[in-house]
Picture 1 (cartoon, rainbow, N blue to C red):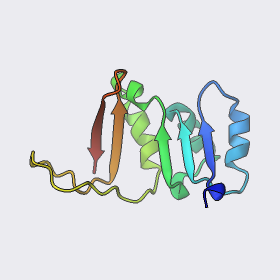
Picture 2: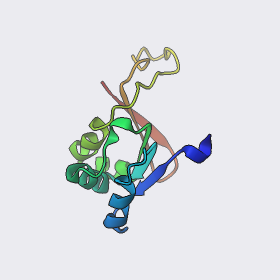
Picture 3: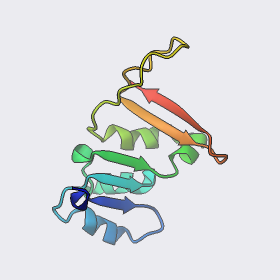
Picture 4: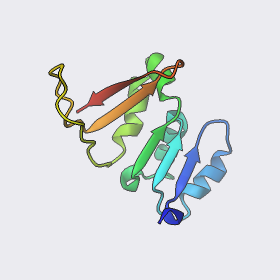
Length: 119
């Protein structure tokens, strides 16, 4: 059930040692929420293994993309072994959005969103 789902928050400004301890406790982490910079630091230190993570939420990724840090965001996304995201069916515009392997959704300050697919 839901009581067995383990969520870890890893964001800049919080104690990275406590985050590292939570990540290396030996328990499976199902959902990871964090800023790309802190996630990348945990990946590089070996504290974070995204290969078994079911859901990854990148906080502030839209801001980093706007500032041109696409490689940093993609580095975190590429470390995941998440299943493919299936599209909702053929769109009228002719775009081939039915089978993306990665999907990023950026939410603008006004609440609108845009989706970027990478293959």
